[in-house]
Image (cartoon, rainbow, N blue to C red; front, side):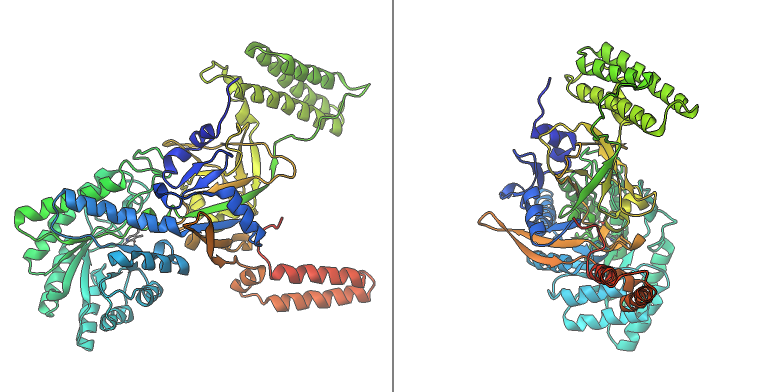
Length: 638
Ligand SMILES: *Cc1c(COP(=O)(O)O)cnc(C)c1O
């Protein structure tokens, strides 16, 4: 029998690969968070969740580690600084955060605050995002990249904001925008800094591959790009054309895709300077990927490059494009959202129960028990007593036969319902007894297929206090993978296989795709539940896109969220608490009036009291439940 340690747990769930350097396991078998990476300081996630619960913050709970966000920013800048030094690049790097990736107030504020020392800026794609960016970004050197489709008001806002000492760059995304920019500039007698988004022909791949290529939704084709340059020249605005932008789509898995795009964009940049534009900035967009499954491959949930490889390629390729032509290298801008914001958020949810785990105690044999049931008991005893694989296999085959016999006997009326239920329970117990023994076999033991596949046939559904539509919508919408694992008991061998069903009444409301080193598996190794003991699951790397894309399906609202900061002394502070939606809030979002709903029910209960169907104390209890619910979370309370 092999022993199982917390390190085995970490390896099983890939924690030692995708979790690096922020997530690991401690000697108690708990997930451990190192919000500052290798620079020291660790929090026990299980203890943290317990203490947050003590403060009245129930699960599901989104925990945001602001130190991780800051660390990601530092790593991004350090990678570009190293690449710039290594390749003797004569320019700088100056990034922006695409607000659409996570617009939550404390997140954007934190990024702006931590990014100040690098003049880190923001990218907006709509008027509302522009408003956030304009008002939060006060550093006059930081860039404010204005993307998205723009009407006259959007453009005028950007032009006028330049007078506030901001640096908005209005990026031409569509051919007809140049006319609006020219009109707005003439009307106001002032111009914005202008950028131009090129629609590259380089092929991409993966989920967002269609963001580039000649049919892409955004960016100017080369003929439109040239026509826009001429229009700006005629309007006397060419002197404001400073930036070339491209974006090859999110989660670039294969670095080769980026290299092609960089070469193409680099040449366009050179041509634009030749046409007389002052330029100065090359914005390589987003797409810097996240290694969700830790496999370091070009599969969709991974990347075949590191952050440093990415920075090196950007810096080296742009230099190679500019130098032979005697063109000064530009300031490099990137709009990395996913790579900055994924790691810092951890969603923790509780498991309410598990179906398929027959933990019910087996009733003892009765005197006149039918033969089929007696046979199943004999098989179970044989499995428990056996020590050889062949004996388990034989007993299991017998058990399957008896189970079929039980079904036939039930159909013909020879077994009653409790007897048939007991037959199923006994068969499952046989399977579980074998599965438990199999788990103890040394690695590499040869196991016959029908026994090897047995744990999967016993797979359990774990009921999660969660709505994936609210908290992890991309798992449903685009089959995205996130690392999911129990945050405790990692030092204990998981003996069950399972998947998660969420709270919604939607058959799509489930988590049933899990990371598997470049592959996908439909069942996750889990522990059997212990009565009265919570079983908490963490969904990691979920800080990008999930919150804003989440919806109110079945009226499950936002979860509680907290911002945690590591203290120098070793503890932590809870910097912000953002309470999840109440039932009243989600009702209002659907234009219901909670007070009115209550009042109708009050009248209905008065009527029921009047005709003797409801006692006054019952009515009062009903109204108390309804009123309390309105002010409380939409999730199940423990
Ligand atoms: C969405 C988007 C980004 C962010 O992409 P990530 O893959 O999250 O880095 C950057 N730029 C533009 C124009 C975008 O549309």
